Image (tube, rainbow over all chains, first blue to last red; front, side):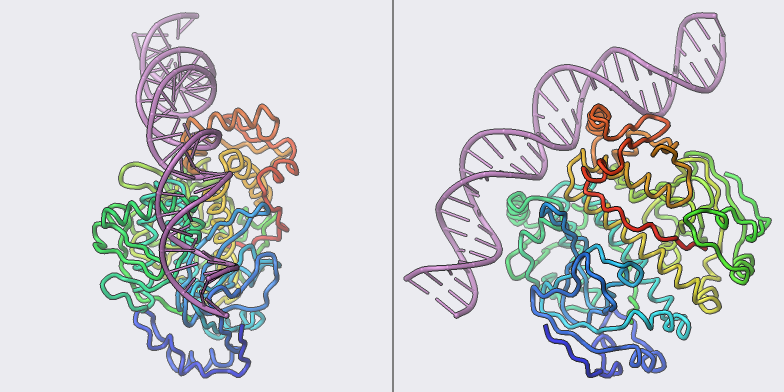
Length: 248
Length: 248
DNA sequence: CGGCCTTTTGAGGCTACTCAAAGCCGGTGG
DNA sequence: CCACCGGCTTTGAGTAGCCTCAAAAGGCCG
């Protein structure tokens, strides 16, 4: 893990140019520049947050993909969500003593560091940014809600298909390249299983079966959904208008 | 459903006196009074929001308990969460065209109505309330996270026990009477099943089995957990410091 | 080439599901 | 007052989906 204290200028933030994200105006950027404390770079497998620890930081994901998960005492693990560029990490830690989940880099990642102490001043001085923050929180809630429906009411086939479609949709929305409905992302079958509440073995069999039917092609280094419409149908995925996400 | 347009004075808001909730100061109450549009009263079974509809309102639950659920096209239903007094309802609808879930009264309920149009002015004029709103959103996220862990990684026994303990904990935190760890609340087994991602039949058998062992006593009109410590242990429920919840 | 991580395949078993019907209880109407 | 009804709970029987254990095969890297 490589922390850089030197403040990188927000005016050159890579997210600013990101398709699918709504860029900040110069005034807001000036403020964010004072709010920003530095950056952190992680390799695949690196930890951003660790369960039961306290954290005094908030993060915005600049590059890469993260997973957020919880572990039970007996070792069972449940991945709660995936995070893409523009997502805010650690908001829950801003209010709690300890965080209830860990966050790990799924692909090499770069994050922007903010101090939670200055958080109230952000709301006071830039209500618009506060509005965006609530927007992000509400969206995250919607995502968790969908995930809950999957875990509670969908079959293994549907869960895998749903996750595949959702990941692609989400990646495209974050401006990540996904030509031909193909996403270059390394998710292991154990991770998929831990996301979907399935065993690794059953996950494997389900993936193979879906590949055989041409619904989802999920290989070690990448994920492809040949026919989004058909897959979305199969999983009862509702394609929502991909409005521009804000970020800070 | 009984809508009252006449503004009931926020200074006499029942939540102000609620143990477990942090009351607003007079200045904030003045503002909320201008923000408030009226009240709505619902009987058990009444709908606050309906899936796929648009909503121009936000609500704060004043009395009663609500459930928030999603339905798939083929009739499968998944309850996402329970809502208690002080909870904000419909925040997601403030940003989206259509809401992805329905909200129904589990017990006779009373809600406070706000217009979403005036939402930005709340943030501008009362950053502290904005902060509280984010606090609530973060907490809701934590709750959904726990629910996800249950659905994904806990057995039926653990799920039922977890839900029972969580409901009691949550009710106590909202100042609802629960003497002797007993909560007077009418949740049907179908609703429990729809919350926990189980079939109604299996839910019934699980409840009976837990009752037999004296872990959870869940009868038609009420819920009792004889030994919270033991039940929490069984379900790997983490008792968190029940800090005072804000509300608006 | 060997070691490590991940995927694949096999076999057997349990958890939870479906279908089906009966019991219960409170409310309503004859 | 009792018969009937609708919603909820209980119980039975059979089964399917998913799990666990176990081991082999594949891929990447030093």
